[in-house]
Amino acid sequence: MTYLPGLVIALALLWFGLSGETSPFFLGLSVIAILLTLLLSARLKVIGRDASPYHRAPQLLLYMGWLVVEIVKANVAVIVRVLGPRHAIDPAVVRLRTRARTDLGKALFANSITLTPGTVSVDVDGDKVLVHALVRENASVASFEPMDRRAARAADSSKRKG
Image 1 (cartoon, rainbow, N blue to C red):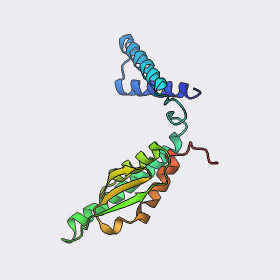
Image 2 (image 1 turned 180 degrees about the vertical axis):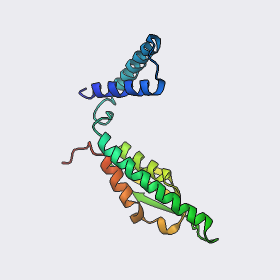
Image 3 (image 1 turned 30 degrees about the vertical axis):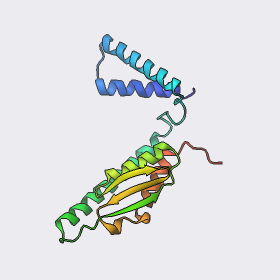
Image 4 (image 1 turned 60 degrees about the horizontal axis):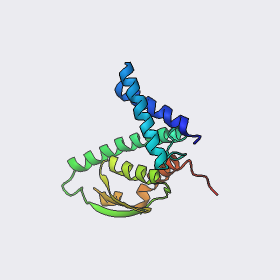
């Protein structure tokens, strides 16, 4: 339960950031919503290190910055393929094994693939991700390795080794 204060702060900031309301009525609703969320989270036993956002924020922010650069590079590559020679698109499907151990890490990796133009995560089953790629040469396991490594480091940073 040591992560409860961080979760309360994160939920309050999210509520205020999305609503921007400061009237007593809306502040009262926010307290009720946060308390209900905490009650449901406690009953589901999901309050803990994996549910708290603040200890993971620096790694996730670094990863998001790297991902934005990769998305821009992939956009350029897809534009070149689409506007280039007639047979420049050669789709392929590849099954990848992710090194991410948490559900957050697996979801971060799969969603990062889908956010990157030219690739789509089709299925996640255990530690395997099925990916459809627009270009066969970019559908190798090695081409996804840096993203997998960085996503696992960012999302699974809370897991203790040993």
